[in-house]
Length: 127
Image (tube, rainbow, N blue to C red; front, top):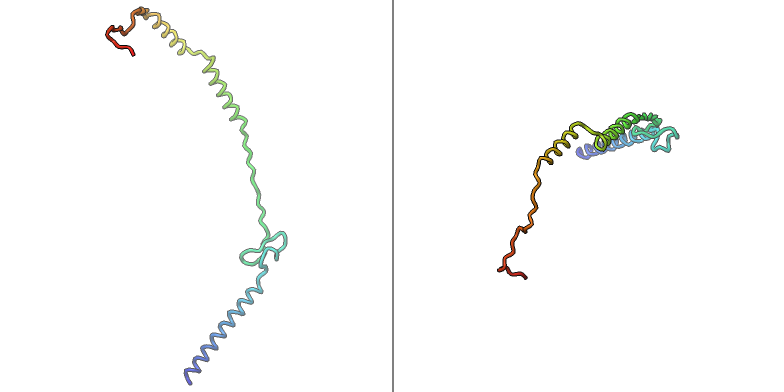
């Protein structure tokens, strides 16, 4: 009989602990301000702490770049490069042309060969 009294006391203590936890859970549910966003107003949302919070205001910073002057510089560089390659005359180029022309004048004319390089053999077979 002594064992049954101990088991009854343990069971009673276990039931009391379960009831206390259940009441704590009910109190926690009752203290929640919201369960979903619809429980809060249109200007707020339900947070993870079950309280309504207002939406934060986000400010966007708009950065505008002025690319006019870089475009002008690149355009002028393209125009100058085109002028240099097409119409620009530099002394280095003129000197090279004169040197090439002088070398061409110094070369002797090569005589034309009237005979073919390969001579035909009378013994050769033709297909």
